[in-house]
Image (cartoon, rainbow, N blue to C red; front, side):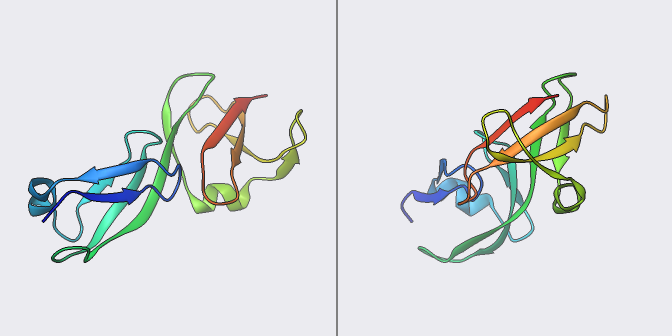
Length: 118
């Protein structure tokens, strides 16, 4: 088994898994992207290219209080969409720790996450 390269479904960062790394992974294990903190569950780990991940969640850090929290589908669906100062459509969420209103912007293809506080 050679090194397997997987694109993070959130930020597009390439995650490299060596044969040794894959040997230790089993369905149900969670991998966290070093770049954006997206959590992915291993759903299949067979031989060669027979490997699948399912996106579980995205962790982000509040720019106001510095605390980390999970950005869930429920949080995003409840958040109003507004236009940011630069004209982009963003989700307006509240930090669960300090209640700061945070603008979250995601690229159309599940790319990089941008945020700012109001």
